[in-house]
Image (cartoon, rainbow, N blue to C red):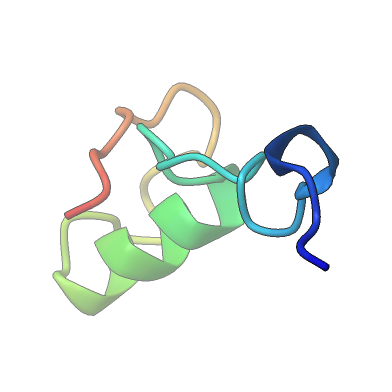
Length: 51
């Protein structure tokens, strides 16, 4: 017997994210040297798309 499609929820609710979280953005900007922790503030950093 098969499970009805309306009852299958695993993996269906997790969609593709548009932007990174703040911690992910800071980490990525530090890796690409777009953020200097001594001069720049982590407040107001630009949003980066997930690719």
